[in-house]
Length: 83
Image (cartoon, rainbow, N blue to C red; front, side, top):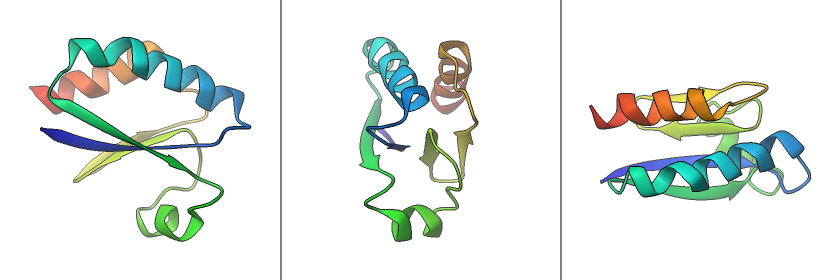
């Protein structure tokens, strides 16, 4: 099982789009478990994990962050994790 942390904010429209993409992709990746963490109320934890922007996906040894995380980028990230 691969554990990923998804840093997001309820007031971030880009995060909502990324969350929707994650929800659509997860049925294809049963070996991935996503923990959703509200960035604004967990700033210390986010900083410790190197998160500087949202939306961000973090897992041991790496992560995916960017101003806009497309469904294709998230799928490629999931593919890399499971290969």
